[in-house]
Image 1 (cartoon, one colour):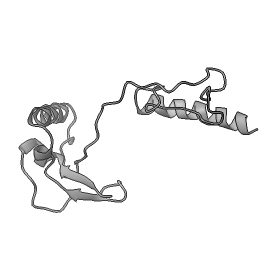
Image 2 (cartoon, rainbow, N blue to C red; image 1 turned 45 degrees about the horizontal axis):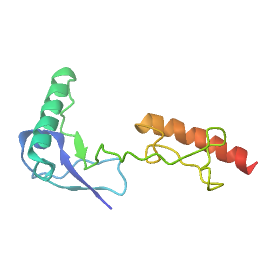
Image 3 (cartoon, rainbow, N blue to C red; image 1 turned 90 degrees about the vertical axis):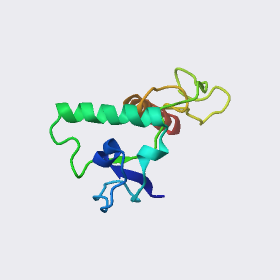
Length: 128
């Protein structure tokens, strides 16, 4: 499914651009969408302000090529799936290795990656 996208400059200006979007490394692709209208007003204003602040600190940050792809949330459920501290398996489901943010063992992309690596090593030990 293609991701909704908008040029960062257009998002900050509160307008939907008329020109085609630049290429993106996101596969399967992007499609033009008015993210500034799709997000709640207070959130869109805060995000635009943050982008403007970054642009003042990093020359070229809001270039013609800068894209916003969305929408990803930063929320998570307060859930922790149990796992044995030694084997990293669920205590009642042998072979099930809860890992990462969704299982309650990480709080972001880096810690999720590290927890996933640790879980993969536990799976390798389990499989021999």
